[in-house]
Length: 411
Image (tube, rainbow, N blue to C red):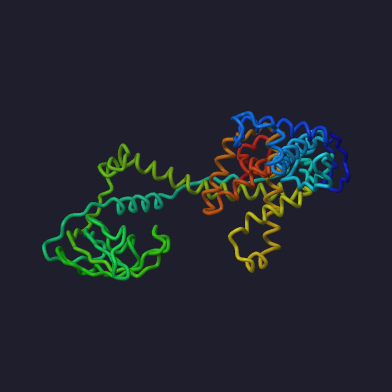
């Protein structure tokens, strides 16, 4: 095998690779021997079909299979030998091949840039301190009380009002026909919250126990049966009970029902939850401050193929006119993502901030779930682009563990 650097310009390197015909023939012979144990042809005992016969019948496909394997093996060896850090999938351009000939091809490789990190000493970020106002805690407690209030039966003949709980059975039809999932028993809804179907609550106002009420509504766009999505549907509802809400008293008993020791413990838990929610939002602001400084203070040449692939991933679900309309902005965003991913990955390697392969796989699975119908495309993207996984690793680096190396901050 002969490997030469054909050209090198920027991050792109083109290698010339020649695999001699003897090596190709040896691989062919190996594959024919393997197939001899597997192939069954009429007139020959299993495992006894002569290689020459196998070659005469399947020669072209076997040769193609062998060449494909040789290309994978030799291209990997060429990249390793030349110590190249590949960005994306290399491109192969066959120059000469065929039985009895040397295999001659060019390997076009976009390499990862060499990254020189600048000192982070002058970088700053805001360290927010959170103080939760008592009114926020009280509002949250009232919300919890409302969500967990009890209901008691209204008197016979009393009508349903906003805030009442209506319990009913229903039978529904679409286009005059019953459908799977079109029946329900013991359904409970609190009038005014509109948690069942749009416009359903209003039509139950004024009903009484034992009434039969006809309600018209439209099934949601995400209804499991796609053929019924957005369909006008008729419901016949048998009213079983009407109940009025009883306001929950916010005391120790209520707190215990919520899983706390007492009301003070519940307040502390609520305050902690609110604080956590604010912390997540403020941490996002701080993270952006840091990332903006990192990106602004580093110049990194980016592999064109990675930028193209990132744009393709970002705009996969957009229509052509939308892609064209926001093309420049999408390219800018793709470059920013790749640049930051590479910088953070480099920072992580230099400071021993390790991200496991399992964490990367988990993040890829999250991306797959977030792109229904395109699971195969996302998976293949990361399988064919090891550098994309490296960039993803960069995004995992916890910027809030860098305090000892990075910045001083204040509110």
